[in-house]
Amino acid sequence: MALRALIIDDSRAMRTILGNILEEIGFEVVQAGDGQEALTCLKANPNLDLALVDWNLPVMSGFEFVEAVRADEEFADLKLMMVTTETELKRVSRALDAGANEYIMKPFTKEMLLDKLALIGVDPSNE
Image (cartoon, rainbow, N blue to C red; front, side, top):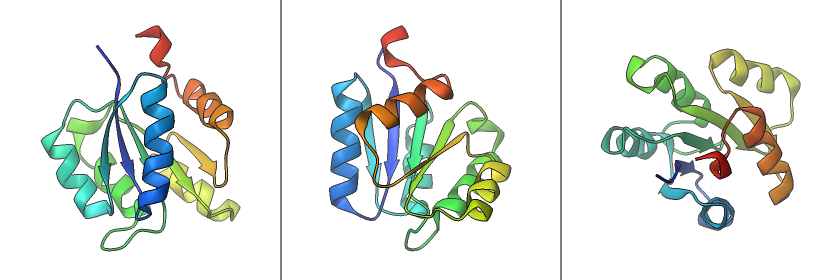
């Protein structure tokens, strides 16, 4: 069974780039343009394995999304990775403290993303 990922970014181009990388390595992908839409998506697809979350989103920020997901026991196993231009170390540690499993800075390469996925134990080749 394929791993399933939720990509949350207000940039359609970024969602497409991430979606293409993940689909290429065997993921099924669902997309959302903001944190609130992402929560709705998550409730409709409770068997997701991974969420790639942009920090700066309209309606509900990626940080608020991480907090909301971690407050819900149902999603305790969901791996969360911030994918963002935010490079401030204070922000990175806030996201990790809130429950994000990993953090990757834009711009990134496919290899960097795969390395980060491996770090958090998400490896579609092992499925």
